[in-house]
Length: 151
Image (cartoon, rainbow, N blue to C red):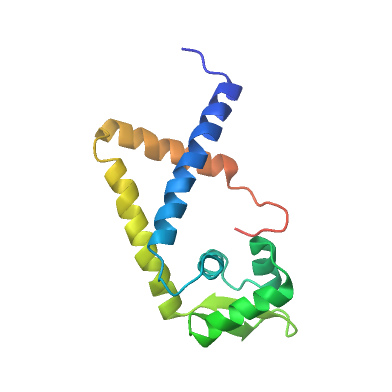
C-alpha cells in the first residue's frame, strides 16, 4: 500500500476531531459542577502554561481583558488560582493553580483517562505500541511553538 503525505494528513484530520470531541466531553462532564466551562478552560490553560498572564488567558478564551479579569478573580476568590508578581517584570502578574485548582483538574483528567483507556481495551498490545509510537511521532512533528504561544 502506498500512502501519500496528503493521505496521511487526511487520516489525521479525520480522526483528530472525533478524539478531541470525546476528550472534551469527558473532561467537561467530570469537571466540578460549580465550575463553568470558561472557568474550567481557564484552569486547564493555566495548568498547561505556568506563570501565564491575564492577557495570555484572555487570548486563549477569546474574551476581553475585563471579562477575563472577572473570571480569574472568581477563581482566585475560590482559592483555585493564585496571582503573583512576575519575577521578570514587576508590572506583570502571573497566574498559577493552587493545590485545590490542580486537584479539581486531576479528577476530570483521571475520568477522561479511564474513558480513553476503556476504548482501547480490545486493541492488541502490538497495536497499542503502534499508537503510542505514532502519537510520539506526531508530537515531535507538531510540537512547534506557535506565534503568541509558549509550550
